[in-house]
Image (cartoon, rainbow, N blue to C red; front, side, top):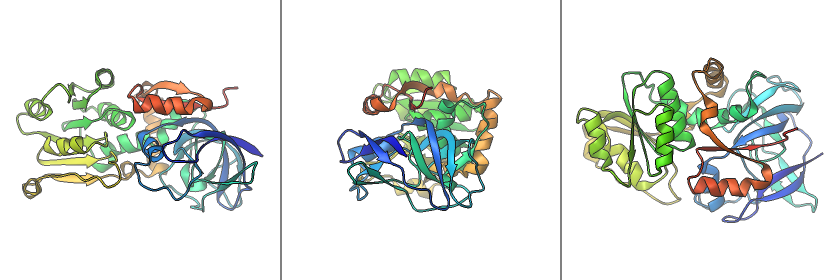
Length: 347
């Protein structure tokens, strides 16, 4: 059996659509027919080499998606053929097995992670799958693999935001807008969105931000303090992956506040903070997928979605087919999309 897939052969080069031979399933592996896959900046960073040397080239890509189980390997108990599933890079329950290796028609090996989603069919480790109700559209469900678990997870799990807290979100792409959307869904009314793109700020206001600031045009720190009784916000979430913005996010919190870093700097870059701020009580922490446990958290988001409290579809502004994946990444890099989704197998 074969599949078309977007393959990264060289850093800083476009992905190449290739036909790959699908390997036989091993114990703990599942073959999924991919129906939709989200794109995010972490994959763009990977393509551009911002994460450093890549010893796994050539390899498939994609770490959030949704699809239908086509076949299961030995001893799989979590899903069965025909189930609708979310694919996520975040480990859940089930087998955690070695990555699959595909082969081109010329016999060249193509590596894969435990999950791939830029491919028509993907061999996936059982613990990267969560079964979902069939009434959830694949396009919307694809965001439950990374954008929502990370962005909403920061609000739900990492900082455990309460409705009376104040929140500043720096960078309102896929992760940042997911944080804003979830914070608004639980009744938080003190949400400030910061970006350099006015259209993204308008979008943030539509999905729940009370205030918006363009950091190219305004003094962000003084405005945030004005909005928060002169003290700064309780929590800030940095999603831009820009050194100066990370430092700005830390400077925006009050003396009991916490900054969560979700963005990725280029390999080797560093940030600077005043250690005295730590002594007075400020905190700066990282996050690993919003501290999400997929088997527990994804059903919560699905319930909120089905009750129309978490409007996932509002995050998706552009869809593409697999052949146009490089255009999708170019649009993502240029800030033309909130969340872009590759849609497969439209029949």
